[in-house]
Each structure stands twice: as structure tokens, then as C-alpha cells.
Image (cartoon, rainbow, N blue to C red; front, side, top):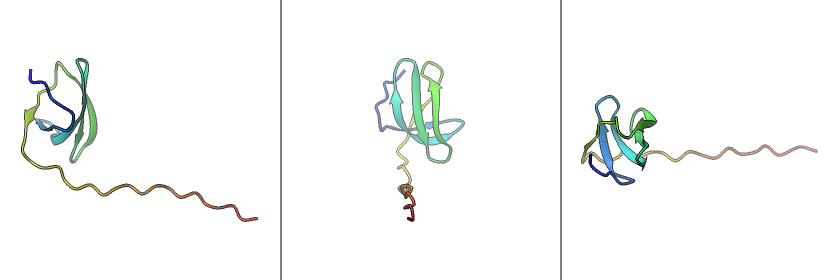
Length: 70
């Protein structure tokens, strides 16, 4: 099995392309372009390297607290 590094672009047969978020001997976490973040058992997951760039994600806006009216 190849040692993947954080930030590597990979593809998985079921979910398609994504970016590796975290990986260790037990779990592999991938943020998929169209399916969100998924966690896999490292010894069971099948990954292939891809040159497909990550899509541009719009940053989430933070919630704004409402001010109390006195």
C-alpha cells in the first residue's frame, strides 16, 4: 500500500475524486468533491492518485449574533 500524505488528490471507486485530510494505520479521512468528508478503514480503502485539481470551494460565512435590544 502506498503511503499517502495530507493534501494528496486521490480517487475512490464509489465516491470519486477527493483530497486526503488525514491518514494513519487505522483510519483514512477524505474530503470528496461531491460527497463531503468520509472516514474509511485504512487497510480496506482502495485509492488511486489523480491529477484532477480540487474544485474552488466558497468559504462559509460565520453566523452573526443578534444584538439585544434594550
